[in-house]
Amino acid sequence: MAEQDSEVLLERESGFYEKNRVKFAKDYPGRFLLIYGEEVIDDFASFDEAAEAGIRKYGIGPFMICRPDESEHLLYNIFR
Image 1 (cartoon, rainbow, N blue to C red):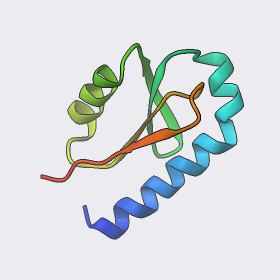
Image 2: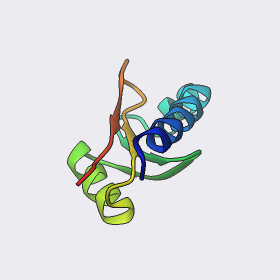
Image 3: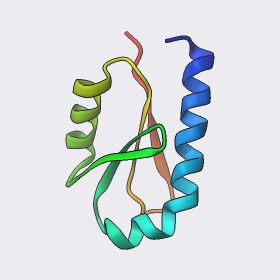
Image 4: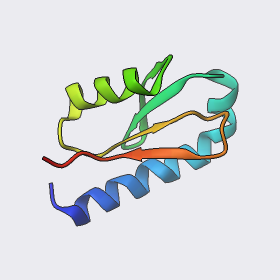
């Protein structure tokens, strides 16, 4: 995937997250969300679990991991 394509996808994920942040904090307290595009793929107890699931599912593609009850979210992007 080209770097420019990755940036566009991460922008979409960030926008989706920001629009739904309050709902996510209520629905997933203390959980790490794996977000791809405009979809919550799953929630996890730890960042490592979410990252492993993202890598298994999307490989080198970009995906977002966030914990909605914290002030910052993490964009996780792997290129081999």
